[in-house]
Amino acid sequence: MMMMTRKYILFLLFLSIPVVMTAQDKDFGIWYGISAEHKLTKKLEIDLLTNVRTFRNASKLDEAFIEGGITYSMYKHISIAGSYRLTKSIENNDSYYFRHKYMLDLKGNIPAGNLNFSGYLRFQTAIKTYIKDENDKFPSYTGKIKLKAVYKTPTFPLNPYIYIESFFPMFSAKSGTIEKNRFSAGVELSITRHNSVEVEYIFQRDYQPHLSDINIISINYKLKF
Image (cartoon, rainbow, N blue to C red; front, side, top):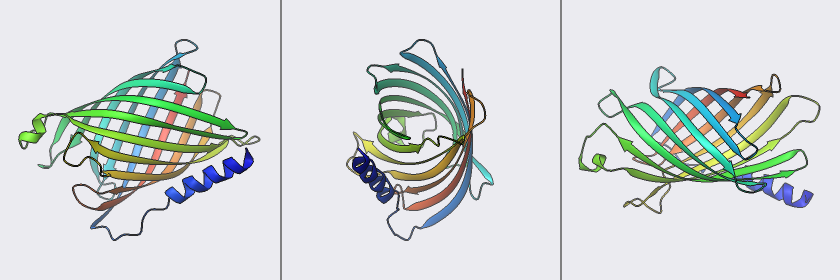
């Protein structure tokens, strides 16, 4: 088990090293988030979150959204989830418009002593209200993969973690390509049994419509009740 755990961590660390390339654009942003989770039953959980994201060296609002979802635990380590996100984001004309996003997840987690490995496969569709050309009238479809490793510190309420995310277009001419990757390292500070704060660094590389990088500091407050 320890050998498998070490190999898994090395695999995540390897994937967390961005490919050395010269990006056309580099940027910095700060993300602020608040989330709440509530168990309705042993197998059913609802969650609500809101997030504000900046870019252009954290001087301009990129998007803000509110999201609600429900998770059903099918087995001990496997669950499914559905959620809806209402976003107001900046478009090409430098104005803000709403977007509707629907998401379906297949989640899994594997505890291994003080380590916990988790991940999900996501299928999502987005609908724009800003129509620039004919393609904007139709929903876009995206797949997403996330892998995460958390170390549960036994004697201190500070849990470090790393994760990777990949986004890829579906049902389009760009299918089979990667839209963007995220590589992150952070810590979760448990304030009380029901309250915690996460602070993380994220490196995001966008490949479409052109190559660009953004370094992100993300701060999230989490409430469980």
